[in-house]
Image (cartoon, rainbow, N blue to C red; front, side):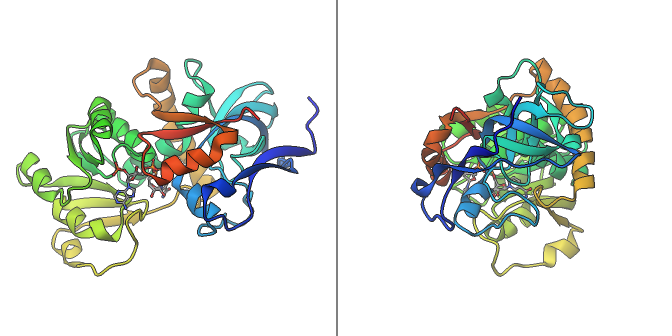
Length: 331
Ligand SMILES: NC(=O)c1ccc[n+]([C@@H]2O[C@H](COP(=O)([O-])OP(=O)(O)OC[C@H]3O[C@@H](n4cnc5c(N)ncnc54)[C@H](OP(=O)(O)O)[C@@H]3O)[C@@H](O)[C@H]2O)c1
């Protein structure tokens, strides 16, 4: 296959405050390193980071593509490692997902389960690898433990509910409307609160006979700190992966000492390559057979044609999505 030197991609003049400044333009086709695949992207998914990056608030890490997009599904057109041209792969990328072609480190790619469409597969990489990194790698969640997951119907939340549930944990969560709350229940949540009605700690303590949960997965940030601490059990772990409601505030550190809490934070995008390879290997070995069996399901909120990328961004900005917003790369 002849790879063109120029390709189509979603572009904008940075910073783009509004989504309607996004447009399709021509950019140089990326050149893969010897350890990278070149993938013809058929589907990509939105992430909150895309909205921030578009607005100039979240620059890509050094060496990453300046094009938006942190996850892709597509066909290998230039192989590396053990992959063959023509295979369907899915992966997180440090950037470049909203392009016609993207470079993917060969040992960070996962084979797409045959039962899934490209759009379904695009809902997997970022959400499920982030969930695995936080719950399993960093949080060491154990079967029989309990967890509170904020924004349960978000891309990450809907993946984390499924992972925790099938891992054998009891899952408490919160979401913003009835449709989202019903989705959370279907995915395995044992209790679903209204995310607009915090604090959640009273109900969580009641549901756990006063003990509290072993883990909180938080993407809200400072405004949720007090509630998170109040619902954590002795020795509890708080995994921080975002600041949707704000990163700054006045907080009481007391509970960290009195209840021996552990607080960990991370971003998948800035996870070192070696750790990402290990993550993909460990998570892929557990997750992929379960997707193939239909035990785990990718949660697709809505599929937008890439030409409607502005509407896709607006849907996420309105907090309207339950699960992942997908771009079909039908240039
Ligand atoms: N650190 C990492 O490696 C990593 C990786 C991926 C994502 N993330 C972060 O994880 C978070 C979720 O990402 P996502 O892509 O899954 O998000 P998403 O699908 O866009 O869902 C986010 C949801 O969070 C809730 N929300 C938004 N703003 C809120 C606020 N101010 N207060 C309370 N709830 C609010 C809304 O749900 P309700 O209406 O149901 O409340 C919203 O639909 C983001 O902060 C993202 O940056 C981090």
